[in-house]
Image (cartoon, rainbow, N blue to C red; front, side):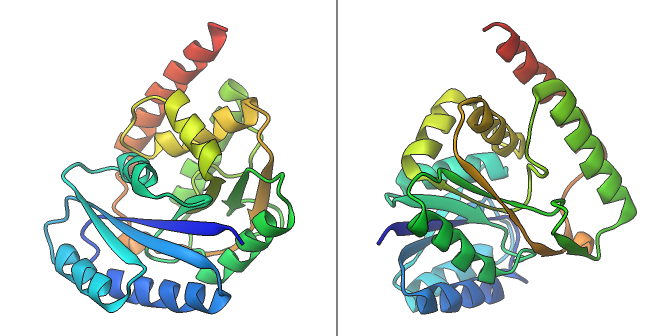
Length: 239
């Protein structure tokens, strides 16, 4: 049986961390797989660290890594660098995609050794979303159109917070990708994986949006994405 590493990037998550890890741990333990959980803290200033350290004492498979920089990209990259499992991925601590979908992820990898990546999607035709604000939908669909037009992306969703990779595949993608600290690292890895003909399974999910607690700054995020899309397109055109 394969081993699984689950990264939870967090920043000031004192309200959701304990519940998220308790639910995730209980479910993963019942799956009967070999696993480790890593909470990667992007320099939280609330009680996230204390809660995470308490969870480490409670559960032997839970570990904690403290960074002083913000960004899902650097959290994921740092987590991958210290996790030595066959499969590694990340899940948003709000569990907007229910942890139960991990059983499908495990089945994909266990039953088909050719699968390299399992990419969950909020926008697959079979997916269902709840509570998503209209302006967030506009932002997401607009980004998807741009990614498809300018980078040729095939996936129906690039940023759903529930992705898993073969360790050797993600190591290669991280070496090829730019040293980006934010969300665009995840997009770049997915686009590069497609261009490398990686075997990707797209998993439709039921998604519960927690927009009221979102820390995303929409305008800044859009500007940042456009810069990176231009940079990545230019890099592809050189070859």
